[in-house]
Amino acid sequence: MEATEDNQSSAYRPLINKSPSLSDLAYREIENMILGGEIGSGKRLNDSLLARQFGISRGPIREAINRLAAAGLVNVVQNRGAFVRVIDLRDALEIYDLRAGLERVATMKAAQLSTPALVDSLTEAVESMDAYFQANQQADYFKTNLHFHRTIYEASGNQRLIESTQRLERELQLFRKFSIERGGMMASNRGHWDILEAIRDADPRLAGDMMEKHVWQAKERLIQVSESHQSKDAIFI
Image (cartoon, rainbow, N blue to C red; front, top):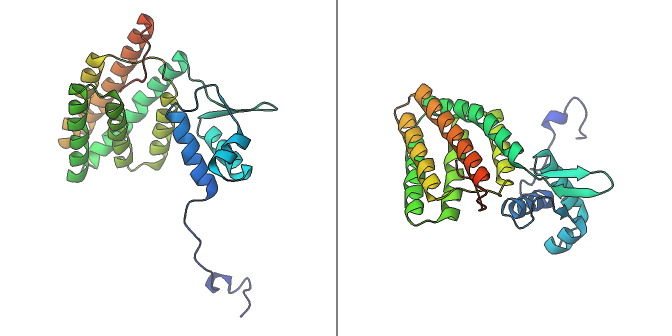
């Protein structure tokens, strides 16, 4: 029977293929290259070169670049092309201001909705960061730190909040000019323990206070390091 306006809702339709598109795959790969520092801040994204590198046409690359621009990682300049966004110290400090408020709300919601599985996941992350601090493994600490914060975002259950915090997190990863010393790592994870304990106790107000304090302290460490002109790799919060 031919599908009409009256029967189209019941007409047979094959299932849509849910596998990632070439644009999705290109987006993920280019995002990883940017956040990993393989393509540095201010560098131009050459769609022809990337297409050859990935073995695909330029169409999916251009779609991926437009999505990266929407995500705040790339600036598209008319008649010049697309460039990895440059985040300077002022930008980074403004991002911390926003994250302090957003992460406070996310952490309060996570504490309200706290489950044993969430507490176990956060505990594992914090214990791992203690071990990475002792071994001075900054790269592993950095990855686990991101996982700790993302776990809290996701536990909030607020999709807009999740998207906003993750966007700011990605933007801050572009700021790689300054870092902290081992003492900063220790202070960072001490804050994580305070946040974890408040979530474990299902105390939203205290959890929010601890997260907001944690972010402000990270901002203060960034200011101190920038003023002392110590050049490293990343900022831990």
